[in-house]
Length: 72
Image (cartoon, rainbow, N blue to C red):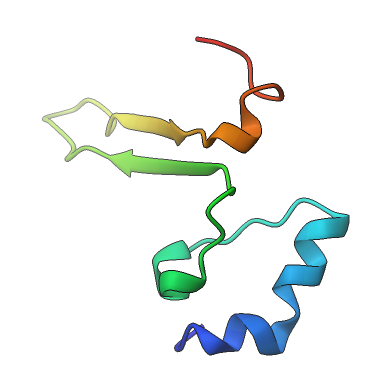
């Protein structure tokens, strides 16, 4: 997506009602990003010497997911 309006053209609202929808670059949706969406962010730390780069997964769990997402 280059513009947030393209999400509407692609029918993403309809797709997310019927199946899991994964959006790789949600920031490109701008204000059109769904407030009730579960957001998972993967960050990669810089590689240090001969060790592989560390990865961190962060979940942002909105209220709509409270009963569907296990407590941590």
